Length: 117
Image (cartoon, rainbow, N blue to C red; front, side, top):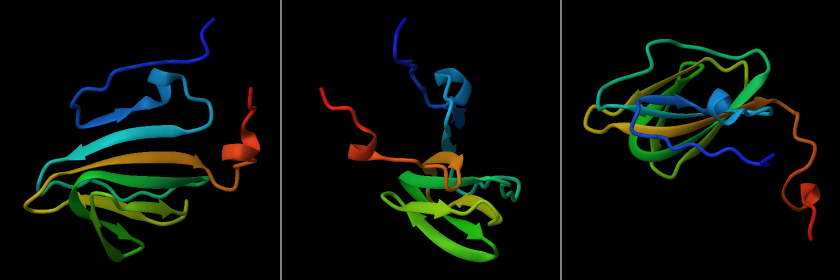
């Protein structure tokens, strides 16, 4: 039995890693929007907060009607109830990572959750 899963991700527009990596505590997706494109729907969540990391390019998010500019290196935490939609800039695509986890579920992290050998 191995204690890890490994996959290789290509250059797809959206890749959800939950099923591919058999994740049990989070959903992780890698998303790419070409210049001028946007996610075609507004959404929120019931229980899960989302953490977005902008890996390349630039764009914007509309969060509860407020426009937030995004560029490579930016990180954004969005509460479950927030209505959200993402767009690439007119002159640049955007690539971002989205991590979805249940709000207030973190029981320990980093050194608190580590076993040192």
